[in-house]
Each structure stands twice: as C-alpha cells, then as structure tokens.
Length: 128
Image (cartoon, rainbow, N blue to C red; front, side, top):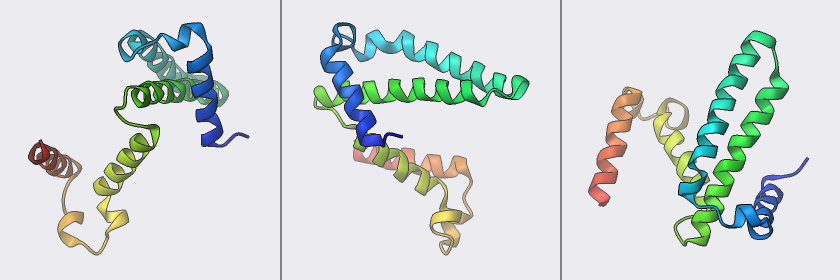
C-alpha cells in the first residue's frame, strides 16, 4: 500500500515525464473529469446492482487521480497545492458538521446545512 505522499509523487512524475500528461491544462482535462465522474456514477450503480465494490474502488481512484493532477497543475501555476485542497475541504466539513466538531456551540448546532452554507458564502464575499 502506498501512502498519499507517494501517490502524489507518482502523479508528479507522470506529469513531468509523460508527453501527453505534461501538456494538459485544467481546460483540456475537463472532458476526462466528466468521463471519470460518469464512470464513477456507473460504478455506484454497479455496486448496487452487481455488488461490484472492486469497480467502485477503481473508479474512485480514477477520480482521485483527476483531483491530484489538477492540483499538480495548479501548483505549477502558483495557484494552490493539494495540501490547500485538503485543508480547505477539511475546514469546510468541520464547519458544516458543528454537531460533531463543536457540540457545545448551541447556536451553530441549531443551524441547518443550508444555513451553514450561507454563512460560508457571506464570509467568502466579505473577504473579496
């Protein structure tokens, strides 16, 4: 089993060394992200209809590769890193699950998912 850092090194090596991958952009990869997402959706259906967890695992890996590749490209462009992606989603999920992460905060725990999203949105707007 490889850890996440080793996986990211594989992605970086592919990006650097593969003639096809090294010229890809966020825009050029859009059709592949759509395709991989559709295959993931089919994998979810296959899990339900055929109990095919192996296919679902593979398709999740393909989507993860897309996320990793877009993150490597973004890092090359000086935009953000995979660590920023992970930090961002981790913070977002913690904020959106106050009953788990701040159960003592009665105000936050009383809010709905949509209300929490609105608070996030207003905070982002204020930063801009």
